[in-house]
Image (cartoon, rainbow, N blue to C red; front, side, top):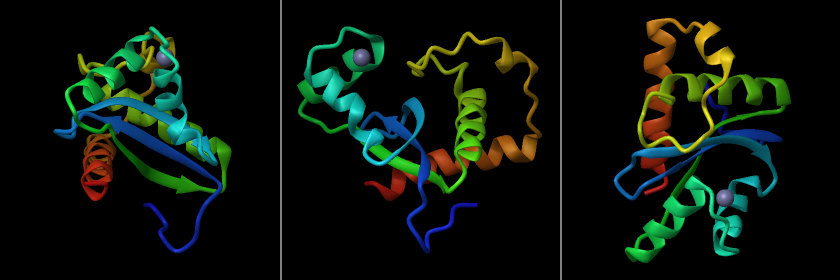
Length: 127
Ligand SMILES: [Zn+2]
């Protein structure tokens, strides 16, 4: 569960459409969460940046949220992978999600539900 008492070094974050549909999952530290918007502003042609600009063009803002914070980089990495695992079948996800580990990784139904909820809540708290 997320610890809200102190600022942790690493985090997992999501980018979502104004309606809350997640289209990118990442992990990082410091201001990494803003890096994709900077990339999009510079005109990057990747799928994720095109989605970001499309949202801006419609007069809306991208909904960014930190959904998990930790002092352990490997924990953040694991959490990011788990989030990708539960969303990689979504047609909206712009992460490059064609990795073998996605098929080998198994998550319990409980864990899957928990992750989906944290992604939804992460987005909602940013509203
Ligand atoms: Zn890009």
